[in-house]
Length: 129
Image (cartoon, rainbow, N blue to C red):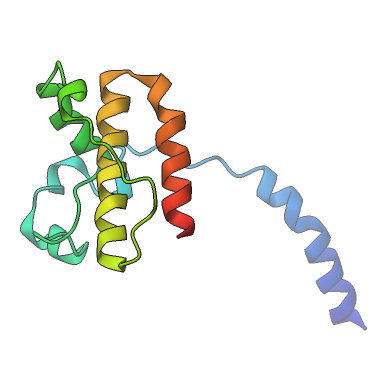
């Protein structure tokens, strides 16, 4: 019985003890995305652990940074006309989806927001196929 009362008393006092603790100091250097410090992002061992290789896609931030150097983007000259019906073959459908996603990057980077809704509806249509 004494042990039970002591346990209950300790459990009731535990929140009071936790309130008096001082918070831990903030870390000096914030890690970059994914918890990896910025100086290790190009380290080959870190890239291997993260499964980043020549087959994986780069981050969206790197894509937009690359597109920034290509300004002004020739969106009107590179605009594709999509087929009226979705392709039946999976490979063709995957290619068309890739083209739609790439066009979405270009349209957003070029600031042509009026085209985003059309691209979104096309992506939805192709995604349901």
